[in-house]
Length: 141
Image (tube, rainbow, N blue to C red; front, side, top):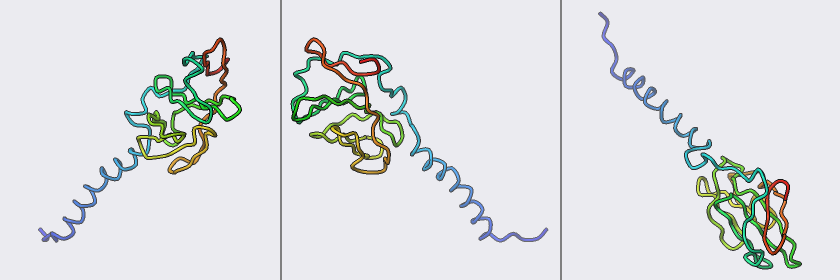
């Protein structure tokens, strides 16, 4: 029986060991456990009192995956807070900047635009209105 080179055996073992690692690295950029169930409203949702969103400010409604901002004139804007990069729910608002916990994407809560990659697509705008002193957001609002 011919002798086998331990160097080639080592090379094969290293290559086999690297395959699962590469698979994990790719899986990390897809929707993971944090993204499960993350969805924007599919019907109008009462988010709370209109007074909760100050002019020039924004408020994150984590339970509904929505952010609402109010410009200087008092007009409201709403966006889904499901990250457009990997579908993770965004759970942090710093001033008017939304920060995704999965890969660090940042979005402007006033415009929905990406301000920091890896996301490249803006957040999805949602219909929003003030009715009876309450903020209502989502389709049909």
